[in-house]
Each structure stands twice: as structure tokens, then as C-alpha cells.
Amino acid sequence: MTTTAATVQRGRLVRPQRVDIAILVFALFGALMAWGLAAYHHRPWALLSLLAIPVALWLRERPAAAAAAIVVGSVILRLAYVGIGFTDQIAVSQAGAARAFSGLSPYGVGYAETVPPGAPFPYGPLALIWWLPGPAVELVAATLLMALLISERSWLTLGLFASMPFAVYLTTTGTNDYSPALLLALGLVLMRTRPYLGAVALAVAAALKPYAFAWLPSLIGYAGWRAGAAMIGASLVLWAPLAGWGVGGFFRSLELSRSVHPVGENALNLPVLRFAAAPIAAAGLFAKRWEAAVLIGSAAFVVFLFLDRWASLGYWLAVGPVSGIALERWAFARLADPT
Image (cartoon, rainbow, N blue to C red; front, side):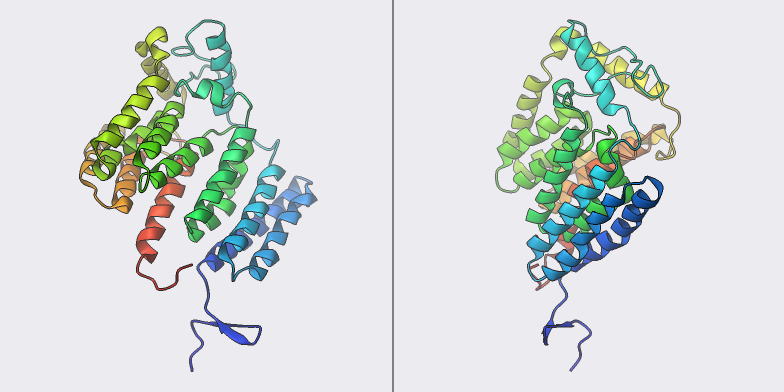
């Protein structure tokens, strides 16, 4: 009898579960980060996150419970990075909100709060109030996103999002891509069963960061024109403040953002090719499988943003989780293992 596909536990053969991948990934990256936090940042309590590993192994026959232990460990790691590093996305949203509350348009001007100084507010109007509480919003969003990954049984994606260094340490620095990532994933998951509710969630994501519109053609292709109209209608409401501030100011912010940032190491700097994203996104109009709809939108997102002269590492936080859900559904759809 072969035991290559089984392990021995409590005197009986137990088939390895896919959640074991998440445990292994978290053990590898989590241990490195916890040790670094303890040794170089004098935060030995970060080692408490590693207790998630034996707990998850103990609960491995209940994958959702084991995954929940990983989430707890990941949250501890994220909290251990508070005060380490700074990015200006939430800071510029708060500065833009202060300007808007004073009766001025938040668009088309540079802000001293950014790094380098002079960068504009290039996000949707909802961002002016969404991030007023600060980076704590993104910690909550990251935690809820991991809960969504558990509900979708996307174990490999969970393991990576819970432990990849940049996905962890950026959470409390002021990066603002976790909320759009949550809303994108939630909206596209809802698209399978409640397309109109999913469309509204996508519209809210786009009102924070416009890159969520990359999935609009896929929404139309998979869920129909009425769902697409729901997203467009919700977006018109959420973007209504531009009627008073002027659409031109928003586009000036986009151009100013591109000019202020230097050529980034995360971008390919081939802007002439970035509009190839348009026909890719248009292909979503013909997507009838959910996985195809998600991945076509993801491909358009990646082409448009990463072929530009500057791209944020945080963009992967937005596209990675929902793409992981789709890829895992496609890859494991025919496996007999329900976990």
C-alpha cells in the first residue's frame, strides 16, 4: 500500500489538505518576518504570531478553523509593523478632505503632505471620507479580505496574502489598496449569485480608486447589461461631487500624479503600450464563465497600470486576491478533495 498521498496522524491515514499549503507558506514567511521584527525592530511580541502555526496544524482537519488561526497570526504581524514605514496615499486623502471641507476642490493641486511633496489627490470622491480614520481602515479591510478568502476556500491565496512580506507590512503604513481589494473581491464574488449587489460593491471600489472600472466589461459579459447599468448608475451617484468641482480637475490630478512620481521599479515604463488594456477589457463582454470574467479584468488592470512609467507595489494587493480566488476555483474545480 502506498502512502505517498497520505500522512499518518493518530494512527490512521489522513489525506493532505490544500489548507496545508497556507500553513506552510505562513510558516515560511511568517517566521522570517517575526524574527526580523524581534531582532531588528525590538518587537519580540511579534513572535506570538508564530503560535498560529501549531494551532493551525492541530486544526488542520477543520480547514476553516485552521485558516482562521493563520488570519490571527497575520493580524499580529501586521500590528507589529505599526510605525515602521510610511506611504502617503491615506495622508493625501486626508489632506484632500480638509480642502474639500473648506469648500475648495480637492483635485488639480499638489499637497505638501505627500512624498515627494506636490503630489495630487488622484482618487475617487468617496476616498475623501473613507480614509479619514487613517490606516486602521486598511487593517480592518485586510482582515475582512482574509475572511472572504476563507469563505471561498482559497487556501493558497490566503497563505500568500497572510504572509507575503509586502502584503503584510504595507497594511499600517498608509497604503490604501486593501479597501479596494476587499470591495473588488466581494463585488466579483457576489456577481455569481447577486449580480446587482456585486455591481454596487464594484462601484464603491471604483469610487475609491478608479482602477476598479477595469472589471466593468466583465461584469456586463457575465452578469448582463442590467448589472452593468447598476454599476454605472451607482458610480454616477458616487462621483456626483465632480459636477461641482469640475471633471477637468480630476484629470489634472491624474496627469500631475504621473509627472510627480519618478519612474518606478515596479513599472515597465512602456506607456505607449498600456492602452492595449482596452481590447483586453472589451473581451470581458464575451466572458460567460466567472473565472474568465475575473481574469480578463485582472489582465486589463495589470497591462494598463504596470506598463505605465510608475506603478505602486500596492496594486498587486488589489488584483492579487480576486485573481487568486478565480485561479484556485479553476484549478481545483475537478478535484475530488472538497477542501
